[in-house]
Image (tube, rainbow, N blue to C red; front, side, top):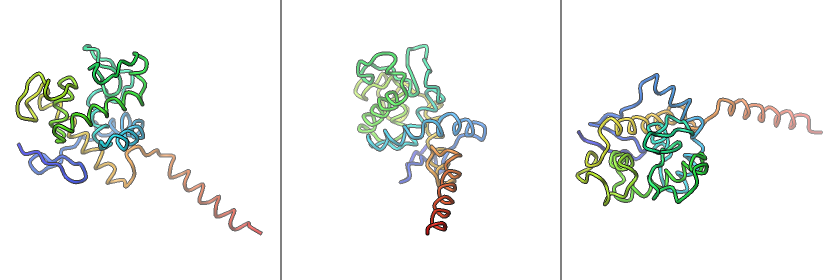
Length: 198
């Protein structure tokens, strides 16, 4: 299996860009891209991580549920577990979406410094968000850590779906249906103001 990443951030598997199926894609747009796109762009820009990658992890980890808690104790949108990534913050702070996405994005940025390949980052993130030197199952990426192909496949498909969604609609992944209506109303008001000017 050959993994390659394009300049736009798409991850190709044997030359094809896997995506979420139609039902999962609709759920992804509603539960992740639309509500959490602004946070992904904000923290992605600040920390040098593609927003599509952040959104892919939100999808795979919590399906967009900001109150998600795993049996292992992982918390929030990005299912933060390791105390190394939570900065000693209290429970309520870790569940706060902006804080959770910031900390999760910091983890992704740190993991990408070792190997920026998305399957490798996904594998290490799923292994418990530990630096690669402490990974539980060292070995060649992307399968050398705890994550198996199913988790990495979810991350890759969600990442690609976010990028393709943005390309197809020519709008940011956090678009809101109200935005075109609001812009149109502002244009009409500006035109009316200009026409009625004495």
